Image (cartoon, rainbow, N blue to C red; front, side):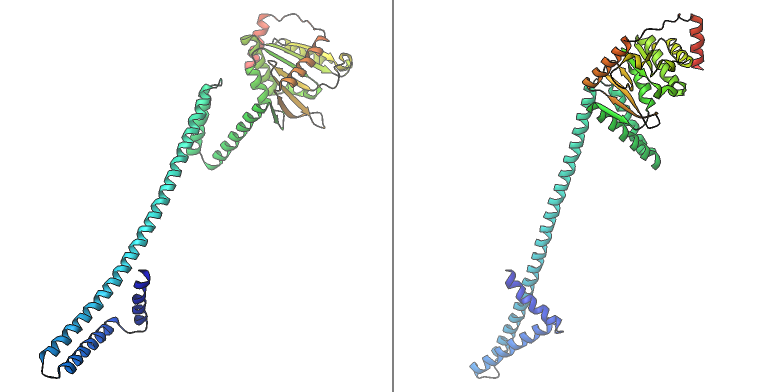
Amino acid sequence: MSGASSGPGDHGAGLQRQGIPKLFWKILITASAAGGAFLLTTILNGDDNNIWQWVASIVLGSATLIVQYLVDFGERLEVVEESQRHHIDDMKRSLANHHAEMRTAVDQSFAKINEATELFSKVDGSVLRSEEVTRLVKAYTQVGDEAPGIVKSFAEEELKRLAELMEDLISGRADSSFENHEWLIDLALCVKKTLYATSTTVDRDFWSSDPAKRYLSAQEKAIKTRGVEVRRLFLVDEPEEVTEALEQLCARQRRYGIDARIGVQSQLDPGGTVMDFIIFDGELCYETRPDNHVRPDMTMLRMKHEHVEDRVHQFNELWAATEPDHEPEPEQGSVRRRLRRVAD
């Protein structure tokens, strides 16, 4: 059908492009048909005055004109139908694409909802406090909606750091590229049973810092409120390094309720160099690594059972090889004064 309809239409379009109106051709074809009919009836009849010659020519010319208009109408109708068919096909394709896009969007939305539901169900079933996770999510969404750009970027970095820490804890080890006092203080606030620690000359300056005061306060709270056993072994290389300042530091920690001792490594034979490490509840080990200037420059958390057991065994050997340095217990009034100074 497309071949039959495209022929006349293309011919008419070609005539129009040549500057010859289609109406002119209709008139010419109609006149030719009427003239031919008149001539034919005249030859056949032989009477020039017969009215039927005129009737036949007019009827045939009119019929020719009507047929031409019918042909034009048919061509235009085919063009309209073809255009409508293309339009309907385009609409079908558009609706199909839109339906596919909508279905994909709905599926993705439901997937996100299912993921969020599954996530929060895991949070509710976890031993961790789910209200803190909910609080974090709510606060993060509020920062994203209300805070300026720099605050949003800072919040994203902090959330990224927290996520990385959670993933590291799952793996059994976490590292920080500096001496992380916040980890140390938070662990002291969380410990429930035991805190065993070594302190070498590497971190001796730490005890005169503000984080050390917070750390000692957290240990004192753990001792008094949760009954945590805190042992700290101050290690030196040679006996002459046991100074009066070190003895005073050890005595000051005993006043917090900490069982503190001094050990000389050359006499203890620990089987190698001892790093600064702290064992919390026999389950997690906090360690620091010194730099070239013998200052802590890296913090490591280790939770692997074998590693923690090795540290516990090492500490127990060192502890058993030292002698307790007993001091008279401070009076109640001196404890209250000391607590008042710490609070100030």
